[in-house]
Image (tube, rainbow, N blue to C red; front, side, top):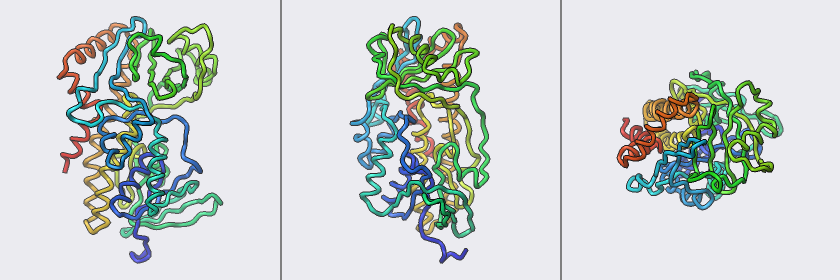
Length: 402
């Protein structure tokens, strides 16, 4: 493939929040790109819903942070709780007020960000987003990349570009097609997600909008979105996943949280497995990965989508530099800046969060809880903890890396 035969653009595969964010950043840098998405519509089921303070700061560059705040629920604190006693350790994000314009978590469905990015890209008129166009093959040379795409009519066609970025999620077709190794582990437990409009905050003393809860013999979490509570539940001992997903078993689990004497109104319910995996290098020639395509982690702490957005903010200017004539090796900075942060600040932190909440031994729980209480009782310790858990420390580390 001669250089003159290659379209001078960047191909993005995946129109989730990470792929669309990368497209918006590249559009702002006057870099031509095109986005392909396999699904005919953007998914509207409940997926990621936590936005951390520095992510909202970054999104403010495009007027998106405050737009999301208007559609979401501000969470000025989060808690680790003991259900039977209603004790809790509360982390107050106001201690970060000198570091961010958004000293809180925001609970807002990711589709609101995707919709806003789609509108901005459409208004700009330069970056097409093609829904229902599925990647079926990738090939590259020293000069460029060719993607084979299957459109809605199922007829394959080819497009070329200088680079291709896979932002197509945990089951990334790009990653699999290129043979990126995806090392890590799958956790033994399966999470059962259920949503309900039941007002837990009117029944559980001192409940915050974000809560990770130990109960006798198990755990659950409660996240308050604008119109619903997102409940993460787990199969009981000896209970199959199919059984755990039945309305009767979900009802029983919710009744354990707050017995009501009447059925809960349940909206969404689904199960998902949790993984901890990462690629060795975010780049293979002219093909790069971002977000869940490059790294996946336990959702405990809400760092997955945020980390993918941070990937996009790191990658876009590097791609623009190379498109303007910098050597391709300049893209190696992307892996240097982001992989260590993902491995140490996102995956391991989420793994520790998950291990703490999966602990079933009462004595070990009590020790961990008292340590958390001691942290929240000392403003400086709490600030240090929140700088890490709110992803500020990871961004600082990435920015300091050459």
